Image (cartoon, rainbow, N blue to C red):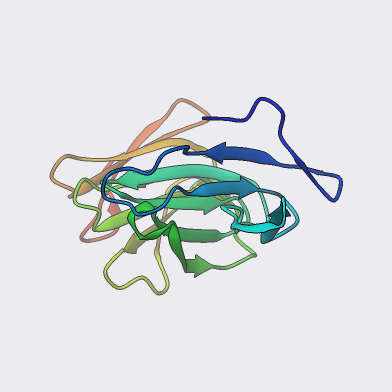
Length: 174
């Protein structure tokens, strides 16, 4: 439920999402407060955890079951677990890359993110580390998706071109 009149945090806009009653499997209701400039917000003498852990625009949210990833424009990816009180961990950060769109394979085993100059960054989510970099043209990728069997990534770019990539061999198919 979104509050109609968001509270202010030291002059910053705060958006508040509140679940009034706990779900049966939870022992407490939770509050999520988001503010661009603070990691914690105090309200009515209480401190609430924030869901704002990015320094730049969040360009995509990608989910698999209860787990989801948030992708920041300036090269950061966080993994979130709502079942563990929104526990999150930094999976990747490289501030010199820009990200625009992401896709998660059906099993959750691969994450692909579109970057500058038509580059697709591909991670094995079991290992993380440095991603594979797939590149065919300099045109910005506007859409990407994995095949059902996770063997291919399909991308669409700003010039209307569709490309296909082999995930295992990290090479362009067409």
